[in-house]
Image (cartoon, rainbow, N blue to C red; front, side, top):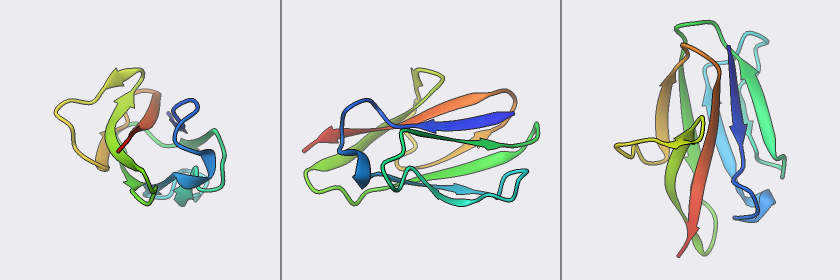
Length: 99
């Protein structure tokens, strides 16, 4: 299963988002993704793995709004910390709004 973390297009500035991902994936990659301006990052997990994502809120003039998974807004809003159960491929986007 793949967990792909994407930026929302255009905003906020690409160098200012950090998403922390745990546990390490099947290739032992962990820690921060999207922290250096990359548009997306993919990790691979086994079925049934619970993956924890944390969007770091350190963006002047912006605030975390919500997550989307496979294009749908997560509701109720878990805030910047979210757990995702891997039962299929997931594409996740942390969405930020201007203050």
